[in-house]
Amino acid sequence: MDLSAPDSLESSRPLAGFRILDISSGIAGPYCTRLLASYGAEVLKVERPRLGDGSRRLGPFPGGVPDAEKSGLFAFLNRGKRGITLDVTRSDAQPLLDHLIAASDLVLTSLRPVTANDAGLTFDRVRGISGKTALVAVTNFGQHGPYRDYHATDAILYGLGGPMHVTGHAGREPLRLGPRVVEFNGGMMAAYACSLALFQLAMTGRGQFMDLSLLETQVASHDRQASFVMAAQFTGETFLRMNPALVSERVWPCADGYIDVGYNAVPFERVLAAIGRSDMKDDPRFTSVDARQTPESQAEFIAMFLGWMVEHTMLEAWTIFQEHEIPSGPVYTSKEILADPHFAERRIWDDLAIGEGTFRAPRDMPWNGVPASPSLAAPRLGEHNRPVFLGQLGVSETDLDALIAGGVI
Image (cartoon, helix red, strand yellow):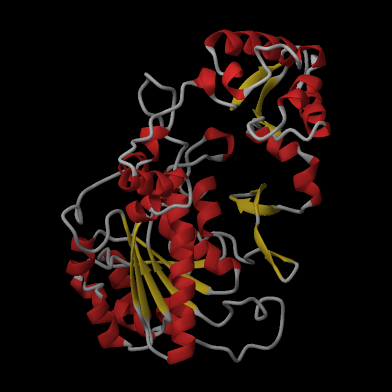
């Protein structure tokens, strides 16, 4: 850790001076280190020679044309980092890897445990190289347990974690919440874990090991699942997916899209007033919760509410519901998110360089009133090989060329 930098915007960020060696790929690990970079950490990303991080091939791409140097996902996940290539699984890469570890305050890896062990990326080895270097391992199932070396995807982890069981309509197959939910949430938890490890390092001078399982971050997430697991132990109750006809918060179609309306904790006469049907407030079908939940009452209310909704735009309906203090909000498309003036006033957008173009991407949470914006664009594959291997590690030009030719770098 180098805390001798002069006072400036970059050096005033909370993680300024910490050096992170990022040996991760995909989403969770790179998102974690992107967050660390946003708050001042110096991150060096290690990619496979020639192939690079798999997210380079996932896109989206400008104009829809695949290009490993123009992936929007890779650019978003890896801005603020320098980048090198090194095949850490090869024995002839180990001396270089050892030097990189020794120069780092924290090493983050997303290698499967069996691969990490074969590559020597264990805490015992890291501690032997430098007792002041922390190691954080971000994997699907953790470093031990019967599933340790199983393969999985984000959707599989979402299902194993429990929420899929209660997502969707009753009588239909379970649904996933959305793409990459577990990986992005896991990346945020990994950033939290890294911050704790760096805090401990600053306090004690000793590196720690943290074993983070993406599956466990989902099981322990602060959503319905945690309380459902406890309820199953307290009462034996297994929560099932709701019947949409009985749900007091749902998505409704309107004239130009969809809007989510939640009226569970709102006096029902207020809902009726919002849609211009105060004349129904004394109707016995709607005067009590039990009365409103009968199939007949639900059918009458849905027909009445839906008839009003389809005659109003999202903005009109949202404005009226908010005037009546009814929780509500449009279901936005990506284009509508970009056009919303609230986000512009809040300055949540940042310029993201991709290839020769510049695109908008969400900023991270401001620090001290200043938006968190890494100054570096995502690295091109092997962009910083020469300054790192020649300048930092002292590799000769001849040896560097040989290592590149041999596929080590």
